[in-house]
Image (cartoon, rainbow, N blue to C red; front, side):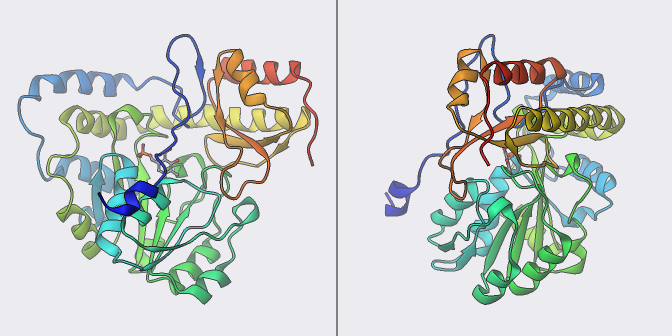
Amino acid sequence: MRNVVRIINPYDAGIFPRGDVILLNSNENPYQPSEEVRKSYIESVDKINRYPDPSYIELKKGISEYLGVGIENIALGCGSSELISRVCDILLDELDKVAIPMPSYSLYLTYAMLRNASILLPIYERYSLDPDFFEKEKPKLSIICSPNNPTGNTVERKIAERIAETSEYLLIDEAYVEFSEKSLLNLVYEFDNVIVLRSFSKFFGLAGLRIGYAIANKEIAEALEKVRLPFAIPTPGVAAAVAALRSLDYYLELKRKIVEERERVFRELIRLGFEVYPSEANFILFRTEKDLFGKLLQHGVVVRNLSGLMGLDGNFIRMTIGRREENDRVLEILESECCKTSA
Ligand SMILES: Cc1ncc(COP(=O)(O)O)c(C=O)c1O
């Protein structure tokens, strides 16, 4: 086995208890799929003796209409996480410089390590990126996340542009972008070296079906498609994703509810005295003094304990925005635990 595999930490997805618990740990959409998605998914079962269409043209057409991008600019993957791996595969040779600002999503590190890349992990308070670092280092690949997991903020366009100018390639992970009002997608048309990653797992609530996509110039999109596992996305996943794109109004209404709840939870956490990070995603990060992760767990609520994550100094909890009654339960428990401010 390659030595690098021995030193890579396994992806820590947190704990996944089943049963009567409130799951606010993986930034999933807490709502059920639209009726159209449910129906298309069920109907697709009759076709599962056949392979899916290898070109995935129907899904690509749907994405193309949704975002106003060319079909030739789209590459598909088994979740956007699988595409992070494939982007590293097509771009990185041994010892190529990869810049991954922290704190951010840990999978970037895993896949860059697997390529034996030379990895730079600059740490930015509240993920407030400094483009001078990228200018000085001139990475082969820079990987940024907007809105960033776990801090929740977006990267300013001007900063992303400067990073694109000074990196050979720039990967922008927009898994949560539909919950914000700021996308960097059109940088793909300004810069030939920018790849934007999107997901059906969050806004479209299809985390269980594993569908993601990348938007990039034709040459990069073709390279990503060329090395994709043939038939990677199963037929029911394709049917559900195509139907989800057709049910956009339904998902926009869910987004409205989630964003409204996010703002309410933010205000309530401030009222309870926490240091809270403003969020443009479907989760909120806040600092705690006590082990509130354990307390919430005792009450059947699972959030993400991010104490010790690279770039976060102290105890932190990341809470997915759930349904109103789920969020109320969290706030009730936190209030009863007599929280103190930690400035
Ligand atoms: C920032 C970020 N990117 C990508 C992903 C992967 O999403 P998926 O593989 O479900 O598309 C996640 C999942 O939590 C994430 O937080």
